[in-house]
Image (cartoon, rainbow, N blue to C red; front, side, top):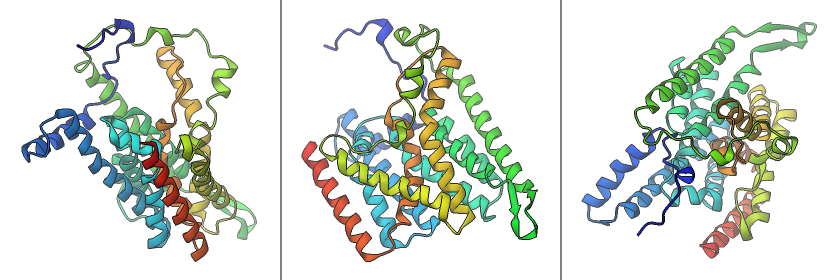
Length: 334
């Protein structure tokens, strides 16, 4: 028999849009129809292989879009595969399984628009999709918005330090923000038809105010290692590989696009969890420590920038050795 869970501790997950669950259900139907397994939960977990494949493909494509060659892009995808924290999202039935695919898709759409390769509908899709899949995925939209906003002012130092306003990017920023707002509002309106419990969710998290430790404790949450346990130390190296190169790109990259992207990634990774805390308090007067997985939509962009650092054969061999070791530790921890 299932254990009794008091009403105050029940979580119906009605806050999540049904997008992931509908797609996973379709996958489980195919798996069960093929006779691979008759167990609904096992079939749902097997669909995670598809989400993992899409997530790795997203990392690879983002790295290639940023300008990394084939091998560094492959190693960037491999780094995601050997991350213990990310593998957990693909092992279980959870909307976080789509964090990497959605994060990579938004990154690709925004970069393509910024390079004038696609129309403004790409920004509409980039803003609409995340809030209709999983709320924390709006983080990648925030990063993309910062990326566009940083390109609004065009400095012209060669002509005496004057500047101009890039109206196209300003319009793109507003389009992205508006589509995000529309996607969020649409889900909030639809949610009332999916809610199965009208009681206040998790009343034990209700607070009257936020304390300084509440705020400081959530700064840079998304800059913590993606691999825990025995692999935490090596996971920190992967993190340094990505965000260290993002910092270098923000300061030294000869490409304005990479300078903007590096700064946007660092800013969002550092303050994203803090913004979630403040949003929770303003909207529902609750305080919850933000978990690392809420920042996983940033991973494709982080690994994509990290791949740019693997220019020499030595760095590529070191990255391959690091990923191999992390993979062995992941298998050991299972």
